[in-house]
Length: 249
Image (cartoon, rainbow, N blue to C red; front, top):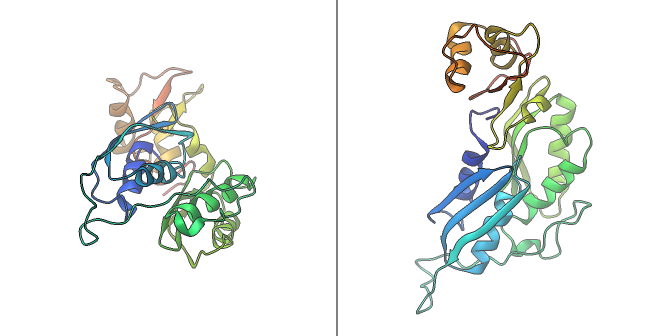
């Protein structure tokens, strides 16, 4: 879990729900080894493609499996008053990050193009960033290391053809934000214990507070009965981190 206390799975679920043409659909998400496995029913093949498109711009997702998404058979055309038109999804953005030619037909095409540009930028490639799209606005969520990176991410998103605004209200500047990208197969932040570490030290490292409330949060998440007993090489899940590495409250 990283900056907002949400796992990769939760962030994929949220992104799908926030996409207007997918809202209300009963879709289930499971993330294993950086693959988002999505199941459920959708009205059309276009909606199925849109599911892949939206999930692919969530940080930590390397591929999307929609083999469990079924297109519902319809005996009659759906009323325009009760259902949204099926989205037509264009091809993914090119490796240069430019928007696809038919971007206007894909409700998530601008997000894909912005995501490609951000990942191609060396200073941003390792930062935990999700890229979503609402209409013609790009929504950036996550964390970057510096104000310069913050401005660069915003600039790259704004440079995508057809983008009219960039929402950065969910983007934080956190020292050593890239460390929040060290995750396990489920997309949760993990920390590998080093010589001299204590749970208090680790809590300070991630939460900016070494108090009992915080180090016990780590202990409970990892089934540690005695907070004084951790060992070198042990991998610890770090639940709900909000401050970031080495940011002291």
